[in-house]
Every structure is written in structure tokens, then in C-alpha cells.
Image (cartoon, rainbow, N blue to C red; front, side, top):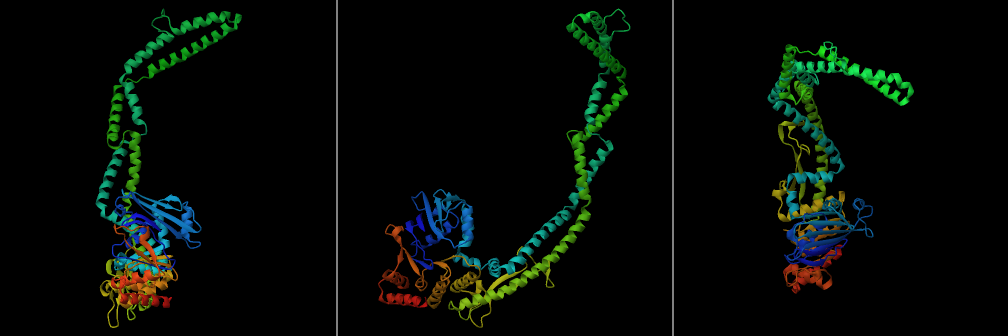
Length: 572
């Protein structure tokens, strides 16, 4: 991994051992930047404050060797990444303005893609993770993770039933709590539908009546115009001397008929004039009928206007026109049927809710049984690990309990509260020595004991849900003496099956590492390329001496450091 312009690190290369790597150095030297760099490569949050003062951006580049057939490799290739001889090249850039870019196998990818791969590649643990372990929800999640399919299968079934119950309960509450509002809505809909039904409008009726009212309002003018037009076309019986269009056209047709046989062109014109005569006769007939049929009855006009007023009253309330009013009526009738069916719906939902609560109780019991069985195995495994971490008499156990709740579900003859993960409250208990009552680890474990419990839990996980790399950031805080030696020994054992990276201040832990990296600042307060180096031979003895006594040249400290290294080599 290469780190540039990140925190106190100017430019440095970190080479991690396939086994156990210990990262050491003075307080403030930049050891934590190694953890931060790994976090960035694995999709962690980009904080612009991490960019070294004066630099435009910070860059972390890493080469990750993937296990053969790893799903992470498949996922990376699906994203367009290319593997380099079985390894994945990852890059993360953070600008001083806060922008962040990620590259995977030479391809730009969303940062979230790195986070997806991280779950399969590395388990990170630090002081904040220890505090997280104190939360009951985290302890339940740890137990469920250990149990695997035994809990995952009933938990999935329980979760589905829980979501259905929540939906049904919400629907039932919505109907019952809004009963008054829904009754008021039904009354308004019923009133509107009754008002529309009383008028009985027809689709398009408003347009038809508007046309009729216009016609009736101008009946005399229309009749006069039709009569005059008819006279012009067909003649006026009261004026036998008058000339009309039909007579003129008929005269023209007779003249041409007499000579049409002499010229085909003239014959065609004669036919067309004949057609005009026929058309004039038809129009004249229709005009005569129109004038005779025109209704100038003022009573009919009054009836039309009254009907239009009734329709207008509807369009003012329910739609822009009668078509919209009828559409409103159709929708409102359906909504009213729904509201009127609330009583039936309440009964159906109540019955469904009760059935789901019974089903949920049975699934919760199965989930509790699975957790109880897994808790016994988990506690026994963690207790065995604690014995190898200088806590031979410590005992770990789980308390799995439920809280009485009259609104809950029935489990084992009791009505208990429930949530999305079941009815169980899971709490990790520790009895540090014989005779001590089991107490919650938040109250019954010191800082050093909590570190060891955390390590023991992770070692147990390693046997059931392994990842290729484990990163521990000073989880050995508060530990010293023999316990520190045992932690180093246990980490070395874990490193036989996985890559282990530990940021530590304990020489007893660092001595067991396959590779020890020293992070040190230069005189100007930065960490350069030469500031992260692999310690071997005399250099490693000097660093362990410094960690032991604060004095690299102390003969006593040197002797102790050599003894620690000899112990570690003997265990290997």
C-alpha cells in the first residue's frame, strides 16, 4: 500500500506480511494513518481534513491479492475491473475540497463498490468496535452472525411475517382512527351523488342545450332569413313576376339542351347546369322545411334555460362540464362503496392481524430456540478462547430474555414485546473469576478484559465466518504483562489461517508478529517514504526495547526484548 499526503504521512509505502504484521511507533507518529488508509481503500468516509496541509489531495493505492475463486473478484470484474496476476489494484483519491474518487482495477467506480467488496475482504476492529460490542443490539447481531443459517432462516421468515403484520396493523389503525373523517367524507360524497342523480344529466347534454338556446333565442331572424333565401332560390308565390334562381338555371339548361348534340363540350356543361338545378331544388326544399319546423315557442326556450341552469349548478361543484361531472360521480360512487365497506374491512383486517400475530409468535419461538442453542455453543467457544488469553477462570454466557407487553405477541404462554429482529433481548455476560456472578460485559469487564473478550469473539468468528484479513487497531489497550503475551500468541495463531494486521503499543504483542513495521516522523514532523520501514534483527530489538522501557539502549530492556522474540519464535 502506498500513502501520499495523508495526515502526517507525506509519502510512504507499507508492505504487509501475509501472516501477522504489527505496526508500531511513537504516539502521534502516524500509526493510525495506516488504519485510515486501509479504510479509504475499502470505501470508508473521505474526510478532507485528512489531506496533508499544502497538498491538493491525498492518494492511497493498494494491491490486494484475492483468494482463488473469491466472489469479490467476480464482482470486481463485473464492474469492469481487470485483475493483475490475480491481484486487484485499488486507488482512492481525496481532494482538499472534499471530493473523492475511487478506481478499481484501472476502472473508475463508485466508492460504494469498494465498500461492497470490503465486507468479504477484511474485518476491522478498534476501540470504537469494543464500545459497539457493549450495545445489546450489537450483541444480538454477533450471536446471529455466529449461528449462521440456523438463525438466518427463521429470522427471514419472521421478518416477512413482521412486515405483513405492520402493514395490516397500520391499515386497521388508519380505518379506525379516521372513522369520523371517513364518515364525513362519505356524507359529502353521498350528498353530491344524490344531487347529480336528481338532475340526471346526459353526456354532452350541456352542449346540445347551448345550441338549442341559441337557436330559440333568434328564431324570428332565422325564420325570416330562411324564407328570404327560399324565395330567392325557388320564387315567391305572392310575386309571380319575380325572377328566382331555379327559373334562371332551368332556362339556361333548356337552351343548352337544344344544341348539345352538336358539341360534346357543350353537352358536358349542360349536364353540370342540370346538376345545379337539382341541387338548388334540394336546398330550396330544405329551407322551406327548416322555416316550417323552426320552433319559436317561448315556453320551450324557458324550459331549456331552466335545464341549463340545473346543469350549471352541477358543473360549478363537480366538474368543468357535464362529462367531468359524470366522471366525478363514477369515481365518487366507487370511493363511497369503499367507505361503506369499512365495517366489513375492519372485520377482515382484525381477523388477518390476529392470525399474523399467532404466526409471528410461533416464528419468534423458533427464533428464540435457535438463538438459545447457538448461544450455548458461542459462549463455550469464547470461554475456551479466553482461557488462552490469560483469563483461564473467566466464563462467558448469554442472557436471552423477553419483556412483558400486553400489546405484544404470545410466546411460550407469555405476551411479550416484539420488533423486526424477534422478541429476544440478547446480552453477553462475563464472570471474570470463580464465584463472581455473571454480569453484563459493560459492567463486569475492565478495559483490558473487554479487549480480550473482543479478540476472543473475533477468533471464534474466524472459525465460522472467515475473511482473508483482520485489522485490529489497539484493541490491546488496557492490557499488559502476561495477558499481553497471550494476546500476541493468540493473534499469531489466528495469523496461521488469515492475514492479521495489528496497530499496537505493546511489545509483548509486536514480538509475535511475522513482520514489524515502524512508523516514525522526520525532524519536520512528516512521515516520508523511509518513515515506514520493516524492522529486522537489531532494529527490531531496539524498537521493542523502546516500547518496553522508553530507552532503546537499555541493556535490561534489550534482554527482555530478545527474550520476547525468543518466546515468540519458540511458539511458532
